[in-house]
Length: 315
Image (cartoon, rainbow, N blue to C red; front, side, top):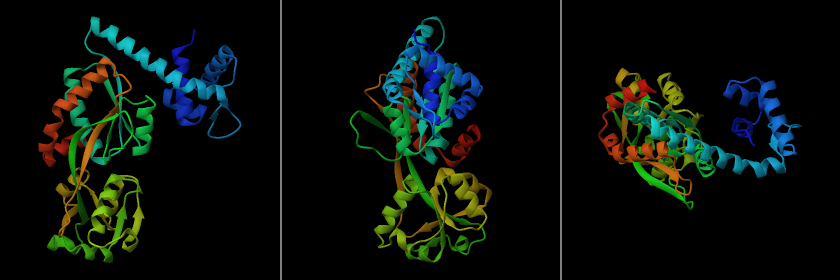
């Protein structure tokens, strides 16, 4: 009979690309990880990984096992949660993927409220790119995710979660901080810090600049950073100006480290969505948190900046 822990280790090695990294994530030594996989390969009569390169790859047998291992572990969690719910309070573990800065700030507040009702449920927020979150949801590795863009794929179900405002921030000592309003073409004269290609804030900015006959190649891009918090710090240090989620900038704005500047005739907003794969049945616990977010997400629209800062503290 297959060992579920061995399958969990198998999936971890595939995800992280190495035995040592999987061991670190699972708090197990590399020799212990290797021995489990050797025993699993012996039981199945075939090698599962190609060990002659980094990151390690899957053999043909490993590729065949991958979707079945995910399915077995999903069913195992569903059985465990269902039976435990008959005898005690709701229990279980839920992985939620997040590819947006605003989602990362808002989720802790919702999760805190959910765990007040269900304190024995553990919720893990997995920060990844949008494409990675979609792949993991389709593969059954994540129950649901937060994204700023709907991907047109069969089976994906989306729920409006939040409307995020993207604002221009400048250092507190910047000359624009005094006037607080500029024209779009003023942006061409300033060093700008952008998120990486594919990030929601960058996409909504570039789309709106085109309406003012400004294309990305015309911008003076001083730096590209893959982290919103790092961008805000870079602006504080005077390395450039940036467009970021208002939620992400809320702390810097309140402390006076950065200043919001209005751009004439440019209102940047984007919808944030909760989504899942409807072809992957939810466990009882997953269904409970999906329904909870669906019934409570509208209150996030009324969430003032002060409450957003409280969410940051919770995170």
